[in-house]
Length: 215
Image (cartoon, rainbow, N blue to C red; front, side, top):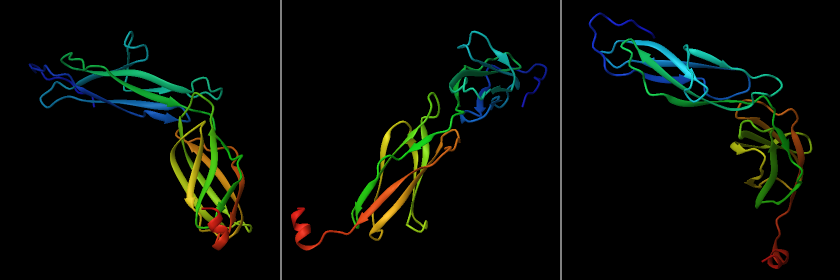
């Protein structure tokens, strides 16, 4: 909150500035600047930010980074911010970053999986995402049986996009054919437009002579 200095006030310490509204956004991002003055200070007089490395400063307690539908502003936007108190003490400029991402991720599951019951099952997938944009996503994989009933749900957070990865688990499912579905929400909150699907075939564990041959 901005305050006014009292007559005769002695103040040699700058205020401390902070910011909220950074991180990744899928729509226009409102960034708000805050500041506090040390106890006994003259109070905060103004807040300002700069998008050109401090060459010019814009005064105000908030600003908006737009997110046009043509994706023109997608990517990271770095800025400086600072505060000045009523005694003209200027806080050192701090740097922060706002990310804009207006593109939906696209899950890909082009690899059918085969697993042995009781052993490790590995489901391969990839989350494609237009660059620049949020570099990670939360991925949810649902495994359903032939009747469509959910038999396994797997959630992976902080998954790198544009990278082929594997989600592994110990397969205790009965022998049979299943369908797994891959969904994704990127770090900006954009959900996928279409989920990806493929099959998981679970076979019986080898026993006796057949198992010995595999050793």
